[in-house]
Length: 248
Image 1 (cartoon, rainbow, N blue to C red):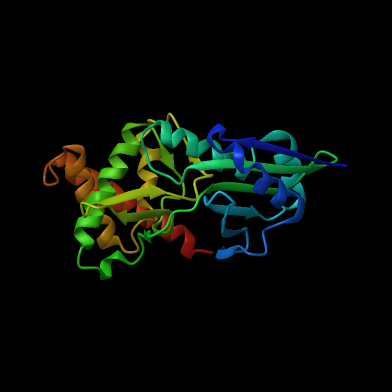
Image 2 (tube, rainbow, N blue to C red):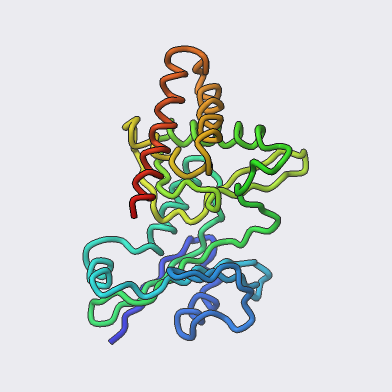
């Protein structure tokens, strides 16, 4: 017997026909592919009321995780939803969560879905070193990092594909976090928070520049002993992460 659980953002309960249809029949045939990877598929669809919705369909996990997600720990779908709600409450931007759905068969975790508002006109923070505004974007990402750290938010997948930006009517870039199922809150351990320097930039030189801007955003003079120590720590974190990955 399969049991389905659906949790809504109360603002979007009127979209229950769409959510129920996806749970019963899978992704809509008229959906637009956004991403298709080994762990999940993301599509976009327009609901009957005109709301553009992103649907993230997670693959059925391996058997050990079917037990874990079924009984011991929250699923990626539920974490995505709850983390989005928490981020928004803290003043950070992420696509507004709509709902998540989970299916269990005889207690074993099966399919799951995360639904959120689909955002148009956004760009990834990827290959920014090729852009003329690279330095400005790095400075703005550093400001975001400082805000996250001061709020005790650790984004474990803080990488170029998971930070999006769009330009508002005044020409200012607005940043939002996506793919947020791996996060931790109320983290104030400096070493853990510094781990967010491991993947955002793709070279050691750019990581050092990001750390330079982080110092400025945090009110630390980059050329001071404290600033130089923080920049050196960011470089060390980057080297350690990529050194370990090259061993495998």
